[in-house]
Length: 80
Image (cartoon, rainbow, N blue to C red; front, top):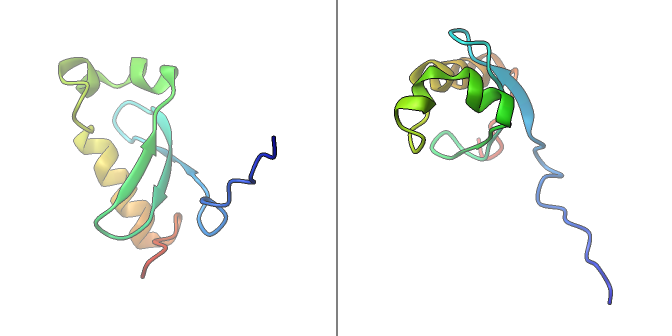
């Protein structure tokens, strides 16, 4: 069986972003201003008090840190 190389992240890899409130670090990819992929680690989930309240929501402080990272160019918005 041949395994196809996954090239979905070639144009924009996941990059670390740290929450200013709880210091949880996640990996982020911004495909557009409207679409954000966030990869949580077990350590980041444990550090975030917002996720304890509702694991299906994203922490507002982390969302703000991601927005700032995109605006300052720390992470790339791919479809800009």
